[in-house]
Length: 138
View 1 (cartoon, helix red, strand yellow):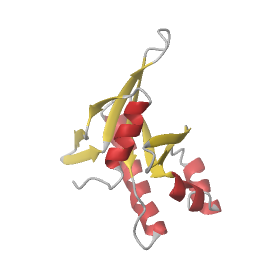
View 2 (spheres, one colour):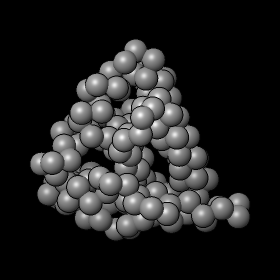
View 3 (cartoon, one colour):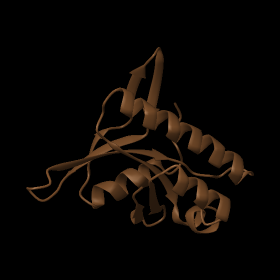
View 4 (cartoon, helix red, strand yellow):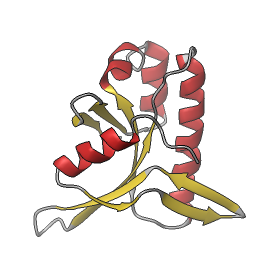
């Protein structure tokens, strides 16, 4: 599967924040299908909290239709979330998007409503600075 144009930027941003990349990609084999989630990472938190595990699907939204890009991203996110649940893999799934797309497109009423109603967690990153701007946990 082809890597997203922002894949490396997100990977580096996670590493700067102390995440250890454990899979690149995270491969799930389920029901005769092979799913490839872009990244999986873990971070050791305070001793009483243990280790946090995440999976991240990176999307660029570079086509002419941001809405079609959103349809594709949401569909992938939904399939990956169900795949992680079915395989009982305890990872929090995030959809990673560049800050420009987040502020221009993801703030539109219908898009933000879908994200909220479907409890889609979003990792907002700055591609040029290779840093994470915001974590939205749902």
